[in-house]
Amino acid sequence: MPSPDPTAPAAPLSMVEVQQRVAAELDRLGPVLDGLGERFAAAGHELYLVGGPVRDAMLGREQHDLDLTTSARPDETEKILGRWGDATWDMGRAFGTIGARRGDWVVEVTTYRSESYDASSRKPEVNFGDSLAGDLGRRDFTVNAMAVGVPGRGFEDPYGGIVDLAERRLRTPGTPEESFTDDPLRMMRAARFAAQLGFDVAPEVVAAMTAMADRIEIVSAERVRDELVKLVCARYPRRGLTLLVDTGIADRVLPELPALRLERDEHHRHKDVYEHTLTVLEQSIDLEHRLGDGGPDFVSRFAALMHDIGKPRTRRFQSDGAVTFHHHDVVGAKMTRKRMKALRFPNDQVDAVSDLVELHLRFHGYGSGEWTDSAVRRYVRDAGAELERLHVLTRADCTTRNKRKAERLRRTYDDLEVRIERLTEEEELAAIRPDLDGNQIMEILGIGPGREVGQAYQFLLELRLDEGPQTEDAARAALVAWWADQQDA
Image 1 (tube, helix red, strand yellow):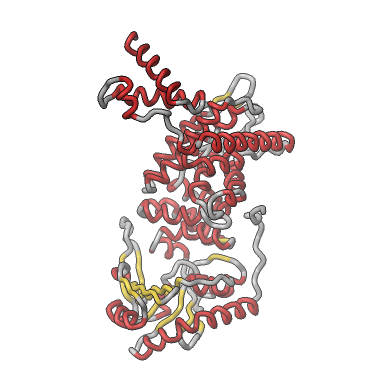
Image 2: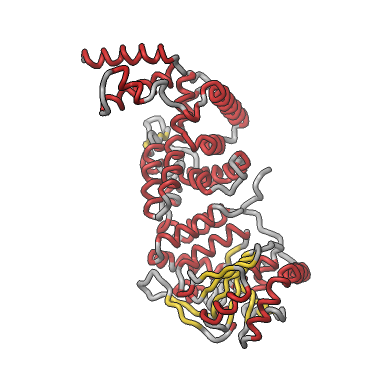
């Protein structure tokens, strides 16, 4: 099923529809929240459902993880939650947040607060507040600055968030300049929410993001990474990525993406690499049903986004007007690894995405299906655990408008997958290894552990890849012959 058009404007919601959705969601949450609200009230404190859960209730999206805000200080909140929940935790205490679980429900209750950034600081300075209005005023966007009292269910919307939500628009409670000065990461959150919700970003917000793009550089790599992951895994990632590129923020956090907007002229025509990349990302999303639980799959999506980033560095113009990008796969893999490490991605994700970028052109050496079984084995071996993702990336990388060419490539890749499946059944390709192990090698050659054992092991692995499984006698004979040649060399 094709993905929704990422550029089509979403239809506004009617106020009646919004109110009906909120009422239904509050009825669902009532058994959990009303009793908790009564406990806070009995202790002399206010409690409000706030932020994402209120917004999502209006969008008809159910939540089991609930954010609340209160006039109580963290110590008091912890006491109340300790008598209400099955378990509590205080990892967010420094920010005024205490969490609790009750059955399948998770709540995080945060003391009214305000926070801001020093001009050169990566960390927010947290101060507790005394009013709901002050707390809502420090939030990132008006659609996240609405609250519902519990248990009374009184609705608080001092900044017009319900209207913005109905019109699918992102605005800030105060001026965007003030908001982004307080926390520059909110500029990336604007792009992320545009990608997740399909909302438009108000012109004044876009203008502030553009003017203040360099301020994102004071935010820690880990926070930037987390927002980027959420954006890439969202329903409309093109919306968010385009906003980051157009405002110049991508130049600071993912400069390889805007660099794909290569100049084109009448004499050196080539595919628009930037638009091609965004299309490959969307097509990879359409193919996620092939992967595990069907997605969203960050590794697959990020590999699609990064697969051609080596092209700007490898572009060469030929005398006949042709453009080449020789070895952009290898160069791109190195660039991907460097960028992901700078953003503090886990090593397993760095390895997976980089490997996919390096392998994304391998299929095009397949021609019309002339690969030997040996070549197919090597394709599977090199892809390793990323084989299914490589299938997705390779198929998504076809963006030609030539229907015959696209169909030919599809059929050829279908054939490759059939061959992989056949060889896998016959030879257990996923666990491919030599026909003799290290102990057998040492026994046959009469040698102890050392470099020669590794060389012999590699020789037998190449033999297995070239010719398929060997009998023990055949593998032994080949090993002895190889060893003799080594001694004569």
